[in-house]
Length: 455
Image (cartoon, one colour):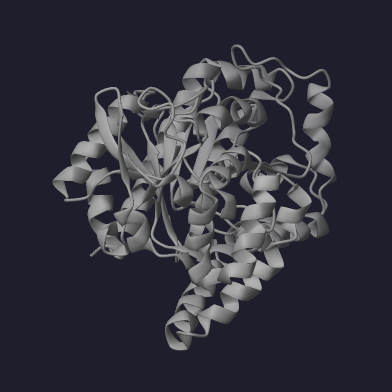
């Protein structure tokens, strides 16, 4: 990636209602009906959930993705697929608070461990037309919606999602026999009746106690089709293994800046607008952060600025080795969902400019650590302008400050993908530049994933 001081993209977004209208039209052109699973009560102006849950047949998935890609004004910045759901992350949709992205989940099956508990064809045949403003779409039968929403926490995770429980309780009370009949084929009369009556009664402890009997009944009835369900279970665990124990669904952005750039403050400003650009957006800060000596406009210096800035001098070879091992482990463990990880650490400072610190180990070890560091999807260098270097020079010789900036630039140019931004810009403008760089990188990666998946 070429170094640049500005990455044009900006905060342009389309309203959620306009996105829904465009989605209905684009799906219709592909011969697919918009079937919303839940949280549609606020349409078209608002989305009551964090994401948009849709039901489609597995055979429609490629056409659904093509429909999303055809919508003007949005960009696909993430894609993750498991046996039962395909999640698409879209940037460019105006949502609550500062978020500019939305997650669209295409549910392909309703399963536990790969074993279906509701047939998809049954769900899609029982849809109900609904209007919201000038939009027309379809929603699930109330009993189906109640079962799916209840099981999203209960059967899959062994816990209740309180958000959906009152609606399930009300629906089961109004259609008790229908709810039992929908559950009976996969769970049997006894387990189905026990669950429905416990929900109607409203006793959470009794509902939780139904989890084991439900799972046992579902597993036993899966033996009626042993080959098919064994294959489904194998597919389920294969996807879970890939999600949990490989870096396939992990996007990493590493923030780097000389002592004149306060990456921590910039990251804090950036995090809210990155919501929903991945299923999980997290900040990762390894080790004590050094604080800035030079102050960007609008970013206050911490009280013990210069003292903390020297904390990196205490680093040793053992500390760097522990950090390197932790970075590799974090690639494979500690995540279960597609994750965007924003990373910052004083150890990046050491790797970029080993000569400017009193690192107690050999400098060749730092160079080796830089080569062994897990590859990031994007590196961002916040580079002070000439005025920033002059401010740094007030605490260090100007030649040393210029040498430090040159060392950081040389280091980041050894990374596969990087962008260099002017740290002297106002914080709001700098955050926009960082957001643009991250969105561009995520969109590029997602495009490769989609081309590989839907050839």
